[in-house]
Image 1 (cartoon, rainbow, N blue to C red):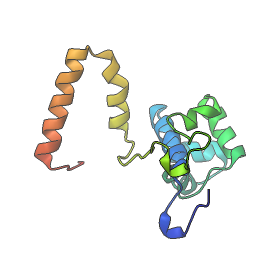
Image 2: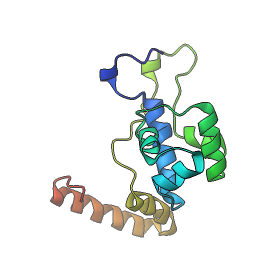
Image 3: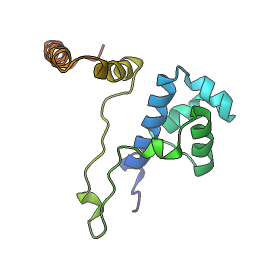
Length: 138
């Protein structure tokens, strides 16, 4: 696939991989500077990786996977590739329009520990709060 012009922004795969790096980093309690030091990079470079603005090379992704103690496939989980014979734009999208924060990651980690009834109550409460805030993300 051709990436297109600079106005198209980061490739969706680069954004997905960067988001997975960000989520794992936050879940493990590291900041961007910690990861940068471990890889010999600046926190600004880590920031660019996480936003998908800069692509992560295969060797750097290997280093990140080793640092996080995960298989390299971790970073690609959730991607839906086009099937043979399917046009690339027919594949299911893998957009992530909300930022990964410590709070969203913790919510995702804690939710399965609740009963289904409790999960539904929390979900209803979150929907009401989001509607009342008009989508504010404070």
